[in-house]
Length: 225
Image (cartoon, rainbow, N blue to C red):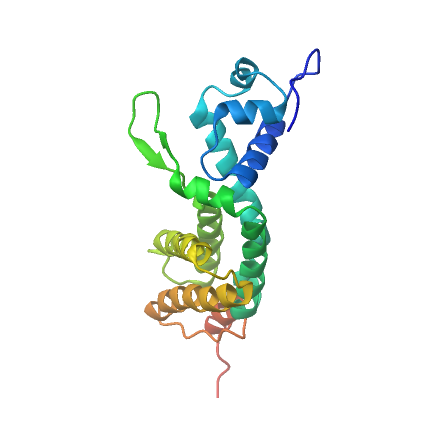
């Protein structure tokens, strides 16, 4: 545990988040601001110079966890540009390994609610909101490029990410944390959502062929017989 800093350079928000993650990893999903300040080697007043309140800090932890947990999706969302079942397995494997590195932080974010504004109601963190929005943006661009209906892509993106988060909670609650089992079952679940959406558009996709290639082939002009 860190000692209180004296005369040290200004501590950053990132360093305080690092300290909070260490506290949650060690002590469980109910950290106190006192413990986080001590771990960071600062007083609580110094902590509150960087974070307006507890909700501000917790939101920063959620943003860090979301970025790290979903980093494997990449900027190009490889599930669209590579054979989907293999791409999903790779992405979900990296995601599961990241969650296992900090399971208490995931539990903390699932269990914690924060005020929505100064006098607003409490709301749960939306861990996957950013990745769902990125997936929706790319999927919409691909769909428009190959001429299929884009209605419902926002629902598909949220459903995929929401399903992964819900299954993660179930997985961590079980007696064993088998990454292989998580990846296998979650891959089939997510692919089922994607496949169902495509079938409603009249597209039969082979999970061994990149979705973008399937859609491009569907729209390629046929040669005259």
